[in-house]
Length: 116
Image (cartoon, rainbow, N blue to C red; front, side):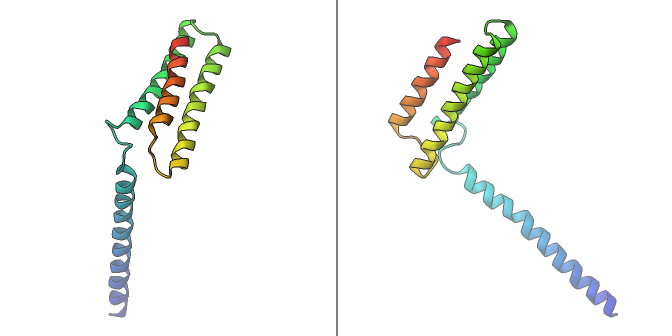
């Protein structure tokens, strides 16, 4: 009889801990998704431009339009722009860019795109 009680209590606590763990990521995801970085936002569009530039660099390298050194230099520039975006987020205290910051980052990306 005591074994059944201990087993029942153990199952109860195990199921409650599983439910608690399952509920936690949902709340965390909600915090990360909310804000101004979702699909359709300016930040999302900017990051899509970064990805597109990286893919274009790789295509141009494979097609022979860029040398390996040129491709590495262009990749380093794109990565530098992304790092600056993250620094700006940290400076602003939230994942948002001021108009001046966005303009500066976009002009840097424009320079890279014109060189490709």
